Length: 234
Image 1: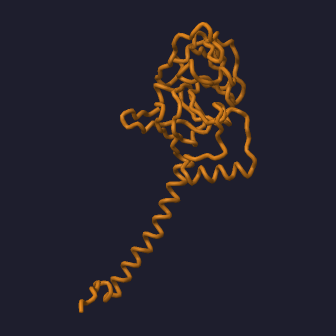
Image 2 (image 1 turned 60 degrees about the vertical axis):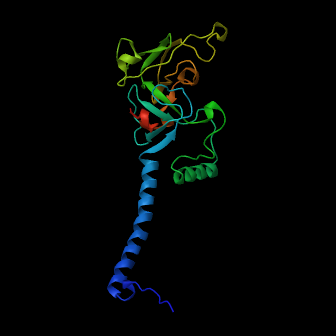
Image 3 (image 1 turned 90 degrees about the vertical axis):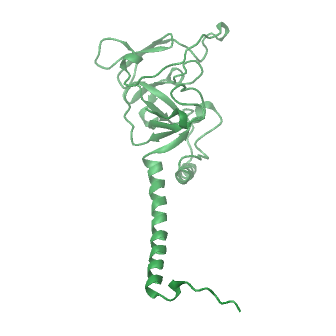
């Protein structure tokens, strides 16, 4: 009759205690790590999936970037993740449910915060003018006069970041509907920001919506980490 194999810990009370202590430590540590990472990836740094080409070449269509929700005071030229612009507001129950689902899926699933409409989804845009600035657009380039200044400068001269914009010829029959490269002078009020897409022809931005309230700024885009061959810091 074949005998049963015995483990040395079966005969050593001290080793049994050590093994149980290790198990207890793991059972305590793993949930703690999970909770820490969940909180960190929701409140400090969370990923977003880019699903359009409105910000190319800065952000790749299909790419994934990190957003920091703690950073809500933009400087000119920075990229910001902005909440939906269609004016829809969830009920208290839907808002709470949506927040809970987003929290436990690390912001990947939002059952009640998006719609099929273009303006019914959060989006990334470049902040180019701050409260108190005056702006106008000519040939798809934004001109900005900072508050308390006397002269207009181009967006590229004022922005603290280097970036490219996509501008190409528009068919005459479009008549610049929805993609106008001209904008009359206006001054931003308190808490208002003027945001534009880098693709100046195929997008929606402050030319259609007007200035964006600071309350809509979810957080600053810091890093595109996918695709791995196009990693960028902003």
